Structures are given as C-alpha cells and as structure tokens.
Image (cartoon, rainbow, N blue to C red; front, side, top):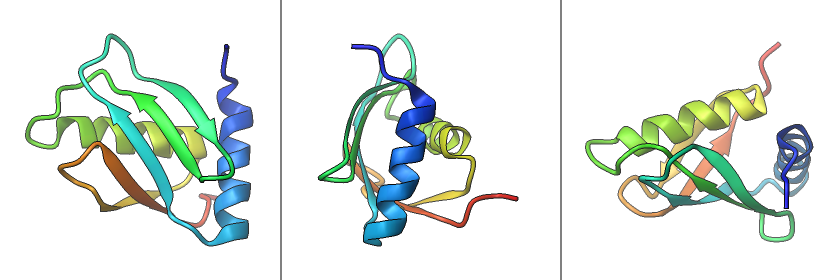
Length: 95
C-alpha cells in the first residue's frame, strides 16, 4: 500500500488539532530508508521506519526533522526519548 505523505500530514494536523492529543510515533530504527509505514487516525498513531541507528539521539534527530518537514511546523519530543514509542507535541504551523 502506497502512503501519500501529503494526505497523511493533513490528517495528522487535523486529528491532533481536533483532539488535543499528542502524536504517538512507533519507530523502527536502522532501516534502509526513512518512510511512513502506517497511520491510524483513531489512535493518533504514526508508524515510521527511520534510516538511523538508535544511538546518542541519532534516530530521534532524524525522526524530529522528518516530522517537521512532513507537517510543515515545529514538533517537540515530549516523551519516549529512549523508547520506540515516542510522543510529540505539534506546535502551530509555520507561516
């Protein structure tokens, strides 16, 4: 199944803004490429492959950069710095 990043980004922003929830991201580090695996609107959960090793914050840095690029706004990792399940707060979109 191909995932349209623009559609997913729009749904993420809409869901998070409407619900006020944090974005849960399940991470699969050390993959060949960074990409979205799945998006569950009901759980406000994104699943991503990350092309970085989970050492010294490398995977977190790549994930944060990818989310910021995907969503077009700042994101803050608020919980899960050393776990595969990470929670992000999405800031106001950049203008």
